[in-house]
Image (tube, rainbow, N blue to C red; front, side, top):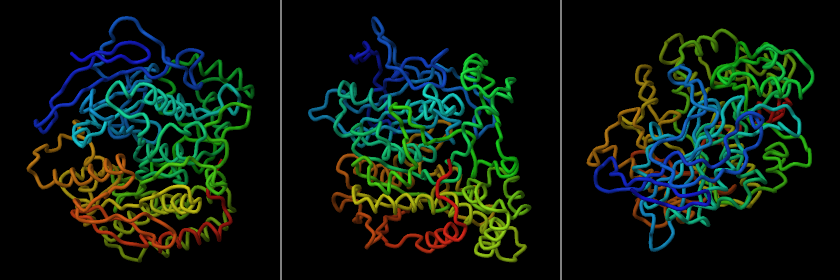
Length: 536
């Protein structure tokens, strides 16, 4: 039994042996970081956490947010009372406070949790950092937007801010340093992390950020007519109205299971292009100004160009073959070969004329697709297109705008490590595609119990786990992934002149001008279409 005092009361955690059985860590699970967002608090910004009396057990995860698991396609009931976090520490009374890393899970803002079935702490805490994982509200519960003062949108991101505030106030009790906090996240968690770099609400709450496979400019991250979408959701669930207050009262009283995996379509094209690489119904919105504290007060591009961002250090990157993950649903490939216009980015689809859309589609298809009828060739080509359109260009665009501000010390990477831990990437072997896919990098940072991966510390893949964990924890500790020569390479900061990056494979290989041709091609696509980078 391990007792820790936080501002809300006392917590009972436990000391656990790590998965490699050569050390221990302290575990505190299911800690509430905000008041339960129930009843009239549904869809609204989180309220401060409530105190408790006595000792609260912190040995089990709190409930997850109600959701559809995007991997199993099954609904998970969870609970609306889901605003919990988990703290894992190698030493709760260290001689010197330890760096803190707060992880934001992915899942399209509609799936996932911070639980150890996916995000076991064993590898990271071994490197001398305190790890925090969090739940936040998902889908409509977290990202409904009525564009009113009550429900301006972005509640799920404000949950993340509330978790960060809790960590700042309490992490010293777990051996953590509140003045050395790194936030990191992958996919929708990468989007979230990028937005915290821009958000005034997150100012001063963290010092570093690791943005993994996400960007505000990814198609799947873009909002489109989100206020209208809320009214379509009401209609879908049984209320047709134009009154936002009437709609809010109705939606606050709908059984929570009816708000899971909804499909409020506002544009007929969404029926066709609404796959998981291109579109989610509920995401970040630019909040209207009601004199409140907005999470995202302006479009990301405008914030970046103004230079009014949080002064933090940033590590950002993507995997070498992100969209091998597209093979999870064979119907997605079929759709792309059936409709030309689906190749066009969502920003252009939603704003350009049909003539411009088809002309743009022709240019993109000519660039990426050959006339080959060979199944493997076609699959390789579509994966390259998906990866570059869906992840590489939007991430590089964010990096370029970030670099232009001159405010952030930045490191760029490409993760290309290959082993049996590439649970998604290894699906590509059937089509002669090799590389690290979306999600694969997480298997080298966490011990994901669900995937039943080997934990033998003498295995070759464990050296690769240690390599990646040391890079990210070095960044968290020192603001530099390679502060000395012990990893065998020096990772240079990125700037507009050197355009340095690190390829993280079986070995570390420095380089420059990563995917410069990809960036130039897609810059040309957006310029010729006259469409915006960000939809609203």
